[in-house]
Length: 63
Image (tube, rainbow, N blue to C red; front, side, top):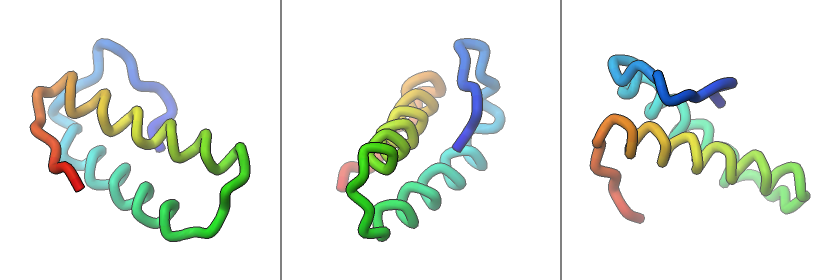
C-alpha cells in the first residue's frame, strides 16, 4: 500500500504502483480475515487503486 497519495501524484509511477496495489489486493482478498482492520485495509487498497486510475485517466477492468 502506498503511504501517501496526494493530488500531485506523478502518473509516471502509475503502472508500477497499480500493479503492486492490485497484487496486494488479490493476496489480501484470498485471506480469510473479516476483522474490522482487514476490511479497512481492503478499502484503503481499493481506494488507492481508484484514485490512481481516476487521477491518471486509466480505464479499469471490471470483474
